[in-house]
Amino acid sequence: MNDYLEFAKRVALQAGDIMLEHFHAEVEHREKADKTIVTVADEAINQMVIDEVEKIYPEHSVFGEEASRDKQSEFAWVCDPIDGTVPYANGVPVSVFSLALVKDGEPIIGVVYEPFMKRMYTAKKGEGAFLNDEAISVSNLGLERHATLNIEWWPEAEHDIDTALHNISLDTKVYVLHLGCVVNAACWVAWGRYEACVFAGTKGKNVDIAAVKVIVEEAGGKVTDINGNEQRYDGDINGAIITNGKIHEELVAKIKEQL
Image (cartoon, rainbow, N blue to C red; front, top):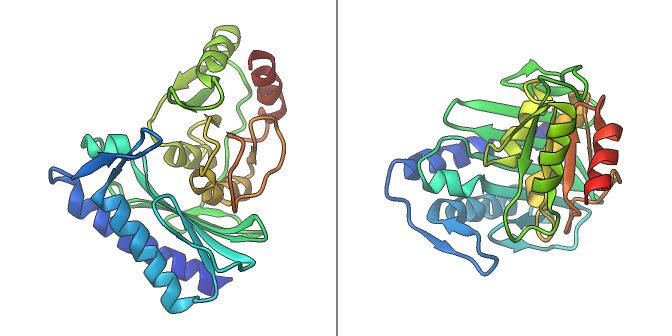
């Protein structure tokens, strides 16, 4: 799998260059049918990923947020060209590129690149998680005061986790933040900076969670759907709860009480 990981890292650096190239310009963007926005950088990166996979792994599928190429293969590259498009389009430097190699629905390679601080998170199934080639691990904090949870929710989201996390915060005194980029926040869980991240996305949102599934779990954490169940990452998902593992079951139970 080393070749797969090196390929993903190389593609991630190319994506980062495109992100930086457009970041300081008046980046052109439009609203999609689902009311989210897309920039010219999103589309350029997505197409670059398709082109690079076609050159090196022509038999593999590519599932991207803006464009896909389904080869009916057991291997699929799952890509979010820019996670955090809204902050990116507004000049807020928190967005990332995300790429996973998924085999039969399970992520086995994950790479996330945050080009503004040049942070690259990587993982291979069974071999640990790394930030710029240094091993990382999750925190050991419980669901208690000073724990930090990130929430990613928007008005069209299927699950009303905004209200749920508000009530959980009042009950447990945890901090609830909204970074505006679920992939970056999830990597901070892997890095031990956050204790959890809760995501309301469903249709087409496997692109947001596929890479962090393997990165967070290789760092010692846990990633499930909103109900605490395992799910495939080559199609639609049912939200995501991403934690340091220690608080996972308790957080799932508390969210179920609220939804």
